[in-house]
Length: 133
Image (cartoon, one colour):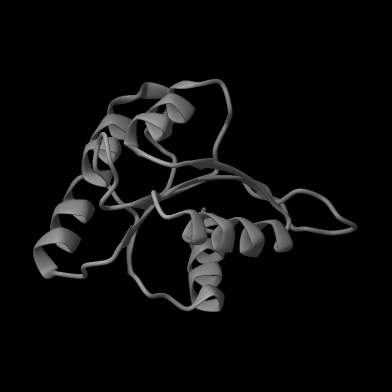
């Protein structure tokens, strides 16, 4: 799935879906510095369009609250797409209530991260998920 970054090689492709431009910029900068290719979506419908498209994603970072379709709706949609069922999804949420966490995990999220988050810790969690067999 993801190959080690050596000599400038690309480690994988990640979709960042978040309605906050500053969060998209932060995550894009963080991930590109770690040798990932990053696509972004500013709302639920744009995320769905990306996921229905031809790009192969190694991981999706998905905001819980977005206009058009919330993160849980996008997550449900992703898990119904045959070619995306195995793609890891990390939900990013401004609210970290147990009900939200439980619902996201029950719908197939691989992890749940509450905002604000430590960029270094988030990157470590992403790398841990991508290193799973």
